Every structure is written in C-alpha cells, then in structure tokens.
Image 1 (cartoon, rainbow, N blue to C red):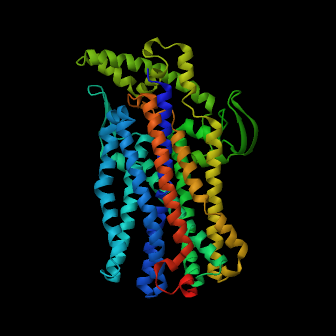
Image 2 (cartoon, helix red, strand yellow; image 1 turned 45 degrees about the horizontal axis):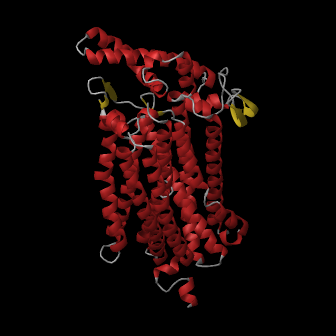
Image 3 (spheres, one colour; image 1 turned 120 degrees about the vertical axis):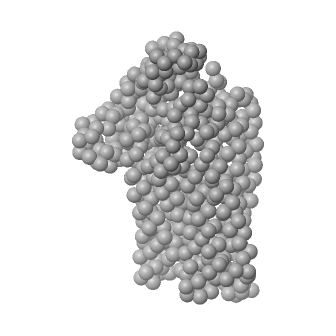
Length: 517
C-alpha cells in the first residue's frame, strides 16, 4: 500500500505551489483587461494621461506576469514527477486542454506582451491597442483551458474507463469543453481575477490621493478600477451562485461540509450563517441559520431535499460495497477479456469502481476489506467540516467587502468627491488583500472539498501518487520554499519600489517626484 506520509507530502507540495502560483494569476487576469480599457481611453480621447496610466500599470503587470509564468511551469512538471499514476490514468483527457493552453494561449500571450512593452514607438495607436487586447485575450484563454481541465476533475464527463488499458479515455471532447462546470469555473475565476486587478488599481490610487500626489492620474485610475471592479464583483457573485448550484447537484458531500449540514432537512433547507461544527458528535454545538435560504439557493426549488452528511456517509457505504464487486469483477474480466457475461456485470457496476478503489488505502485486497474499513472509507468521503464551513464564509465575506469598496469608489468618483473622502480612501488601501484572500480560500474550498478524490468519484488521491520516497518529496518541498521565498522577495521589492514611485517611474517629467526634483 502507498505510504500515507508520501500522499500527504505530495498533496502539501502541490497545494503550496498552486496556491503560491495563484497569488499572481488573478492580478495578471485583472490588470490585462484594465490595460485594454485604459489604452482604449487614450486612443479615443488622445489624452496623454491615459497613455501614462496604461504604461505605468502595465509595468506592474509585467513584473507580476513574469512571476506567474515562473511559478506556473513547475506545477505542470509535478503531474509527471509526483502524480505519475494520475497522469497515466487520465492523461488522455487531462493532457489535451493543457497542450492546447500551451499552443494557443501561452504563445499568444507571450508574443503580444513583447509588442505591448516594446511597440509603443513602432506601432500605430490602433495597432498597439490591438496588441494589448490580444495579450489580454491570451491571458484569459490560458485560464480557460486550465479551468476546463480542472472542471473535468470535478465533474468527469465525456470520458469512459477502458478495462483493457486500465485508463480513462476521452469519448467526447466537445462535452468536456462545454461542460457546465467548465463554463461556471471559468467565468467565476476570471471575474475574481478582474476584481483582484481592480482592487490593486483602486487601493494604490487611493494611497496616491491620501499622499496628495498625482491627483488627476490617481482619480482617473481609481474611477476606471472601481467601475470595472463593481461590474466584475456582480458577475463573480452571480457565477459563484451558479457554481454553488452545480456543487449541490453533483458534489453533495462538498456542499454538505460547506454548510455544516449533518442531517437531511425537510425541503427547503435552512442556511447556517454561523455554526460551531463538532465532528466527533456529528452535530453543530451552536448555529444561527436562516430558514429556507440554503434550499432555495442550492436547488432553486421549494421541494428538493439536500442530503445531510450522515445520509451521504450511509449512501457512500452502499456504493463502496458495490465498488468492491466492481473491482473483483474487473480483476476477473482482465483474466478473461472475451467473457461477455463478465463484461455485462462490470458495465453494470463500473460507476462505483472508484468507490471500491477507495479501499486500497486500507486493504490491498479490497475483497477482504472489513466492515470497519468500509465504514472508515465511507466517513472519509466527506471532507473535514470546520475548514470548509469557515473558508467558504471568509470567501463570501471578502467578496462582499470588495464589492462595497468598488461601489463607494464608483459613486464618489462620479460625484467628484474622491479627494475629500479620506475615510473611504483609507478603507480602500486596507481592502487591498481582500480579493487575494477570497481567491485563495475559494480554491481551498474547491480542491479540499473534492477529497478524497483526484478525479471525483473516479480516482482516489491515494492511488494517484508516484512511487517516490517521502524524503524525496520533502526535499523538493524545502527546495521550492527556499526558491519561491527568494522570488517573492524580488517580486515584492520591485512591486513596492515602482508602486511608491508611481507614474514618476515612467520618466516623462510630468509627475510628482520628477516635478519636485
């Protein structure tokens, strides 16, 4: 059996590298289209300040983009180094979107980012704007294909298990691409990125206004950032609601943990605003809830029940027992592949094959699994409740906070009273981390909530890892921590340096520090 220490370290390494990488991705997504808007204003009005805005925020975009690329490449290598069986088992499907991302999106983005920085004096206004747009489009297409791959892990359609190759194989590429999970994940994630870029512009612009520097530059930047961020916030929340609906329909154990719902309520179920989950007693020690709200949001009906954790565990036990039969039938079929009776038996049971594989963690021969092992495997099909419950609420709270900042910023900008609203400007500066926190805990909810599966209901995490030693993985984790810490120091130094300089870093002679000199 695979060492649990190896599995935990492999999971930790991927969590560290992916969540670190996602510090840079949302800002890249958000700033890319803000640059398009700012440069469009320059092309339409001819005002120099909009060109300066595009160049300055583009400088910060470029620093962030470089770190995003550097940290993203290592993640893809980990599929081969740390998750070799996963790559073998589902590579036929998972590898296709990643290959398209590299060929279509990354090359597009990388090509036009060069034209963005070095083409100001070589391209016409319209030509440079087109390059900026294609750079932003490449960033978003890159996110699209990666999120299609991730959505398939959450909701594996358009594929079939082949008992002869012992792999999942693609049956319908378009079904994978057009999956409702892929659409909801893409729209929710990119709009969260737009919020992040907008908050970055709003917070820094508010800081310049508090310092009394580059007032017209900062006011215009904050107005564009706040309006863009407000629209993105509305879309993010709408697609978040759509994502929650899909989770309720397709991943009931995840949503039950998110809502700390232990028992199945009569429809429509209440929504717990605050709760203290007690996992030993399998109940909430304290709870404040709103009647009906969870049922209405999760099912969009008054009559559909949402199963609680205890009922889901009981259902998982049944599926694991069916899964044991699926595994044993598969073993027989592998020995006698022409036996049509065995084929028919396996086809009737194969939807529960993944549940049978869950027992490999406890017993190499699943047919000899004890009732206690089956019970334990069933219990582990539901992720830990407290981390899921509170992470989800932190994400929502940060989103509401960011929406408020954008709404007030847009209102004050339209009224022309931004400079006088000192309290708002201070809050806007303090709100800078909110979208990053929301993005990080949002990914935690999505990925931790899928446990114990790498591919939901298909491949358990414990079977996905490579045959490495725990020491090998630990050594690479230490290496990543040292390297990424050094990169973060460089990133923060450059970002803070140029952010403090503001548009004076452009060397035009029109801004604060240059005028002082």
